[in-house]
Amino acid sequence: MSFTFRGGIHPKEQKQYTENVPINYLTPAEKAEMVFPLLQHLGSPCQPIVGAGQKVLLGEKIGDSDAYISSPIHSSISGTVKDIRPHMTAMGTIVNSIIIENDGELLEHETIKPKDYNELTREEIISIIREKGIVGLGGAGFPAHVKLSPPAGKEIDTVIINGSECEPYLTTDNRVMIEEADRLVIGVQIILKVLKNARAVIAIEDNKPEAIEALKKACGNIAGIDVAACKTKYPQGAEKQLIWAITKREVPSGGLPADAGCVVNNIDTVIAIHRAFIRGRPLMRKVVTLSGGAIRNPGNYKVRLGTKVNDLVELAGGFKANPVKVVVGGPLMGTAIFDINVPIVKTTSGVLFLTEKEAYIPPEQNCIRCGKCVERCPMGLVPTELNTDVLRENSELFVKHNGLECIECGSCSYICPAKRRLSQAIRTTRRVELAKLKNKG
Ligand code: SF4
Ligand code: SF4
Image (cartoon, rainbow, N blue to C red; front, side, top):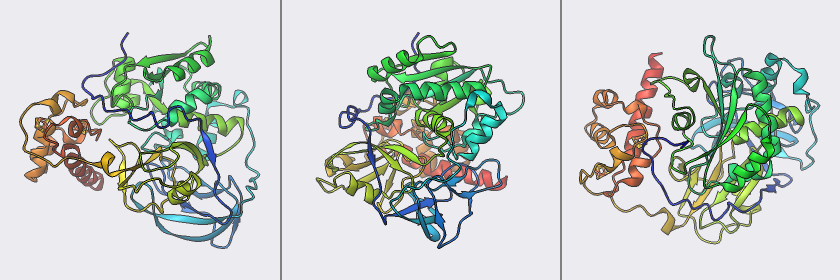
């Protein structure tokens, strides 16, 4: 069976810089300023529950919210709260943040205690996942406790563990699957204890043979967990495309994976769930790929949330060339940032430091009506038509032409021989229209 989807592209992978580099730890220096934005997830922001001057411990909860769709924030170091103020994040947004000075001692909070998931009820497991601040670490940061509590009447029969990692340059999931395969399988078993009627499929692109082998070995003969080797094609890791590839089911327009009987979890999210129970730790660390031609030691680094990108660069050995562009995430769906004095947050999967040659985008030319953008759009949209709607400022037509269905994958811009900035234009208008809908309630 071929696990793939319609459309998509084959960008240059650029994973050779880091795919064989084992995960390394980068520990923030004593007195380093750590920044914890109070919104690192999809949903309501947290409120601070500590104040300036207060001492905090590693793993201590420092922000929380009463809202159901939200997720608490924990300190990843021990130290002293210096301030609570708006700060720029690695996602390019300004968010109220708790600033903590690291005391370098890594003194642990009393709440760090392992829990035997075999002795817990489904509700207790979900409650711990919430309390430990676990969110989808693949991009959107959807709170994991919400994902694992499908609405009444939505039966989940398939849990997909997303090991596609289809974005160029990024290699953290690949390394985690190779190095932490056994932990990953325990994390999957915890999820299956919550979603009792489901089977799990660990979906990995077939350009990661070592990870496929490691997971097949770790799964052994465990019933209800399979490994699927998916065709290497971007955006294989996008939720709707992955669900289609594995189950041949479509997520309805405006719907959720649960509408197709599925829950999709990222590799690092499953590892975070493992750590929450087996080691009692809240979400405090993240594996990130630091790559691109400008960084001296590209690699996969386990870093403490709140560490600033400029500190990470220094800890990783600095630059060997001037980065003309810094991208948080992959080059196709990531966000370019202009200031590296920003913290790593729960959803940061990588930071790319690109040289002039890597960042070069040829000038835009007139559309030659080749149809390639239409052929490659994984959502079956007509990007050139949507771009015309944007240029004519006709948002009504944009919505009518299903512009809100765009998953912002960037495939249309990548494939366009005229280098039209299709996805960039579509993304901006889509976000404006979605915000209008949200405000309407
Ligand atoms: S229109 Fe949207 S979904 Fe389609 S290729 Fe472009 S960015 Fe991707
Ligand atoms: S790929 Fe580019 S040139 Fe071809 S139809 Fe689409 S917008 Fe026009």
